[in-house]
Image (tube, rainbow, N blue to C red; front, top):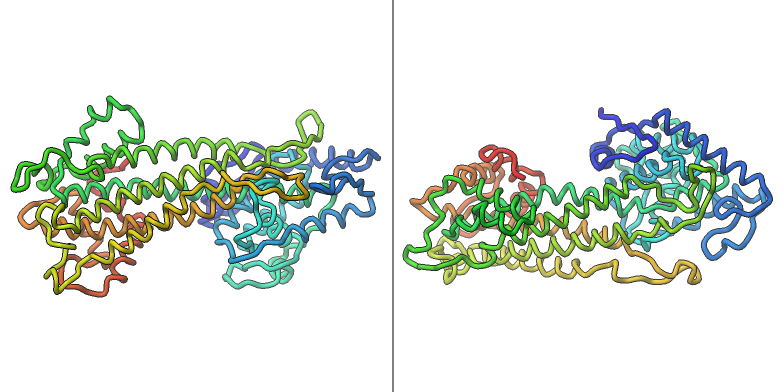
Length: 512
C-alpha cells in the first residue's frame, strides 16, 4: 500500500487524495517529530510562567480574558473539544473526514502548533486503522477553523463520541480504539485548541473537487464535440490560430481537445447542405470559450490550494524565533472565494451543455434529426423527459452558484464578527460537481444517439470509440421508448468513473 510521509513543509494534493480516497498509510518523518518536540518545549515553558498566554493558559474566543490555572488546564482542553463537537445534520462523507484529519495532521507536523509528538502519532494511527469520526453537515462558519467538524475528529482522538470502523459500522470511539490497540490521548495545554483551528475541511473538499473537475472538463469537451457532430456543425471554429489571437490557456486547451475528438469525422462541416447556415449556435460555437474560462478558474483555485497546503493554520502559532503569537490565519476567505468561483463555473458549463442537448431534441434546430430523437415521434417521446431532468439539474446548479462567501454571521459574543462560510461553499460545490456529472451524462446520451441516427455519415474514430464503449457499459442506442432511468444511471457512471475520457483517449491520446 502507498505510504505518505508527513514532514514539516506541507504535503501535495496527490498526498491528500491518496489518504482520503485510496486509504494510503501515513507516517511521520523524523524531521516532523523533532519539530513537534521543539515547539512543544516552547509551549510547555510558557505554560510554566505566571503570565497568561492565549490558548495555553486562558479561555477561548470571547472567554479569552480569563486566566486558567495549571490545575484546570487539562480540563480546559478536554472541554473545548467536547463543547465544540456540536455538529448537526447528516453525516459527512468518509473521504471528506479523512482529508480533514490528514490536513490537520499536516499542520500539526509543521512544528507551529505546540502539539506533542504522541498526539500527532495517534492522529496517524487513526487514519491507518481506518477509523473515521462521525462528522456532521452543519457546524462550521469557516472562521476560527472548521470548528465543529474538527472537534468531532478530536473527540474520537480522546476516545469519546462515535466513529465508523473500517467495516463501515458506526460504533463508540472508545471500543474502536481499543480494538486497534490505540490509547486515547489526554490533551494538555494548547492541544485541544490546536486540533480545532484550521481550514482543513474546506481545503480537503477543494482539492477533491479540483481532481473531479479535471476529469469533468475533459468530459465536457468530449460531449461538446459529440454534440457538434450530431448537429452537423463545423469544426473550423476550433482552429488553433483562432484561439491563439485570444490567448486564454483554458480556451486553447478545450478547443484542442474538441478538435482531437473530431479528427476524421464525416459529420462536420455540412453547413451548406439542405439547411444552409453561416454559423453554429453559441452553445456549439462558443463551447471552448465557456469551458476554457472554467479551466482557467480551476488553475487559479489550484494555486490557492497549493498555497494553503503550504500553510500552517492555527491560532496562536509558534514562530521560528520562539514567540507564540495570535493571528487571523484561520480565516477561510482565500479558500471560500475559489470554492464559490468554481460553483459559478460549474453551473455555466452545465448550462451550455443543457442548451446543446435541447438543440439536439428540437426538430426545428437539429438539422434533420427526429423530434426528441424518438423512434416514432408521437407514439414515442424519446428523450423529452431526459432533458427535463437535465434542466432541473441545471436550475439547481444555478441556485448552488450563489456565493456562500458573500455572507457572514457574527458569533462568539461578537468576538468572531466576520466569518468566511467556506465550509458551506465547499459543501455546495460537492453537490454541484455531482450534478454536473449527471448533466454531462444526459448530453452524452443524447449526442451519441444523434450521431447514430445520422445514417450514412461516419463519426470520427474517437467518437466511434466512445459510442462503442458506452454501449458496452449498458447505455442503449436508438430505438422505441424504454425505461430511461437505468440508461441514464449507466451513462452517469460512465462519465463519473472516467470511462468516457479513457474511451476517447484510446484514439486521441492524452487530452489536455
